[in-house]
Length: 244
Image 1 (cartoon, rainbow, N blue to C red):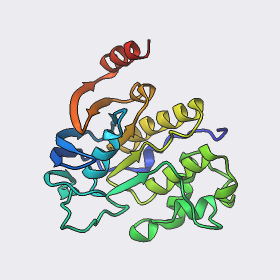
Image 2: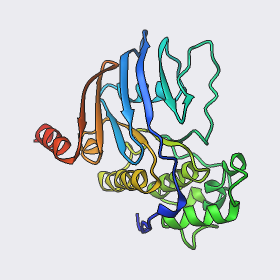
Image 3: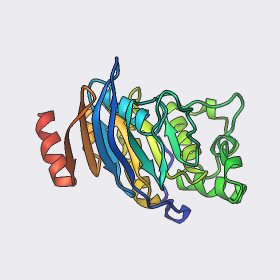
């Protein structure tokens, strides 16, 4: 990735924590009374080697249903039961997935602005310009997304998620297919964005190296939260030992 990182601090943030309490689901992707808090301004990694972290993330933001428990953000309940419709919007959570999709013919600018019709109070062109510049896309606004290297397509996806000023960012193990150097750079970017935007960024990941960039690590095994680690020194101590 050659595009530089500029600070997006001036773009603003919500400053509200994601509160997850007692999510439970039986079946093939179980959750067992899973609870955690993802603080605004922090990168929280849901670390698991059995996809439990991804299951917990999807349940916490209401993509997949649960049988009981709650998650809330800015006073709005995100979790849902199977009888309730998925009502998640790009203003509640900007979502990053393993495939940084783009519509046919989309340019960098049109992709970043894809969800801005849901935030009409924002100046569309100014927002696209400022988000694009903050992610290193100055002068590349008309470049077709499909022609960019995969790592830069992921960076465009981050811009699309951030542009409408969501209350949080939810990253569903998006960088697993990238070479480790590019994955490390994008994970570092998520840490910077959490702090600069004042958002909770929740990142489900399967690599121990991903956990070392977090402010807060939630270890998930079999759908159960088995440990939580806070702070640089504690996280480095535990995961450095695991990688030896």
